[in-house]
Length: 208
Image (cartoon, rainbow, N blue to C red; front, side):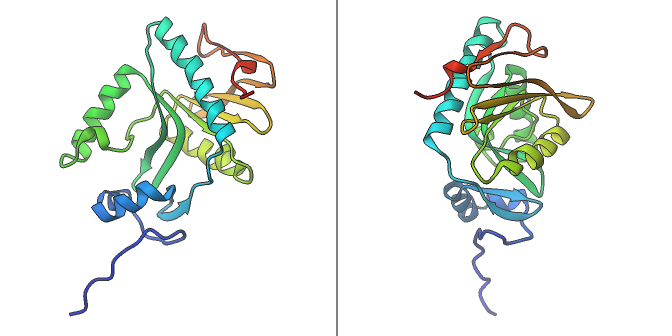
């Protein structure tokens, strides 16, 4: 009997499931390859840019300060896998979870993958906020595909940060459809109706 061929994560290869990514050899390739799973097809993520990541980090810092002050205490992490369903795994540039959502994620992880450390399981529940930092040439991925899938998944707030056009679009989920909460460029100060008390002075997030 011929030995079974070793399966590798190759861009464009089909028939993948999220559960396949838990196999040790595949997990290692996934971790080091900057991949996403798009309808069962392996896709390559665009490269990260220092300026874009720095802008995202500054924006995240503003949100963390606000949520500590108002007591909601959202937790933040970057480059996080989000499981939309078994054939779709997106990698979000920035993710915020509420304390309650952290508990829900832990319970979902233990139920879905009892043999894995729950702290290492991909996000299985809709976060309170996802931020995507747009990469040149990949705008449609963030503005169309991810927007539609995050809405379907139930992510309440989806923000699209574009360092290259110096803009931030904040979307809020209403009846399963994203509505614009705020849009600003350059040195605008954004006030979000859906998040009372939060204002975002854009001049503070762009790297010098």
